[in-house]
Image (cartoon, rainbow, N blue to C red; front, side, top):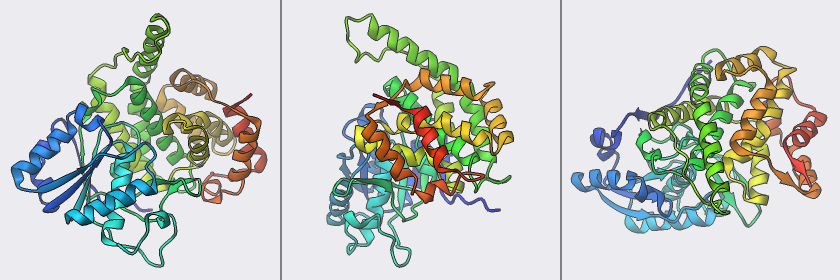
Length: 387
């Protein structure tokens, strides 16, 4: 058994400012990688730049990262980093920004590698520039994993690149959730839930690495009613507003932000030990084909995967349900429906997804007790509405 997370992780209020010395020690010239606006709105970008300005570290901001970052975007960012002479990368945001920062860190010090070839396994491990992660959503846990999920639209591929890039430093502060849309908080929290469930229902799960998902699931269970109430209140407000479905007025108790962010980091540590499993493998095609946000795309498949695993490792499933404060897989599925709703696809898409998943042994081989083609079909049929 082995437990290995080399990232220096701080989880506390105002931790960017509290650990300014750690941040300033990473390098002398930084490329800050983030999305278009959220890091400005939630104050995380200002916290980081204030520390860099006070410490005399030069920086340039690349704020063009989209959801599900593409090879085009990371290639552009890496070239800007080279031109600027950056010696480290700071990723601020959700999984998209931090994953993009990791990919840019590979390209920055390996100029012969083309961004469109990031998914190809290298002949030998490649070095990368140091990465600092400042997460602002409560789902991906990328600050605690070596994984970067990148999309190559030219070949319709979304998956993790084969390079392992652990951030050297992660600064995790729940206050950045305060300005996030409540459905985004819910969506990313569902991703964290999937990370922990898939980490336990996994052939790589063992006594040592289960410490993370078991504790994290307990914390997540303490948040579930607030998350459900947030979605219900937001839906009610939207229905009462003359069709204005863009409202985001539901509230999440501010005291939960730190717990949600902490849980997300624990969930990241969980999959750093085991990798994600079948629900994540199934989610990527759904995101590529329908633009479904990552958290719901994973969550749609999660209950049916748990149901399949219940026949193989019933004690593990019982443990998961108990930690979440649930009595059955049916109650688990109902909770997810309240949080993310349902998903409808065409028969053609459903069949394409099934065919691709049946040969995805990188995920299928992780199922404890194995999984049959019929069980793959069952998960899709139970998870998606065909219409």
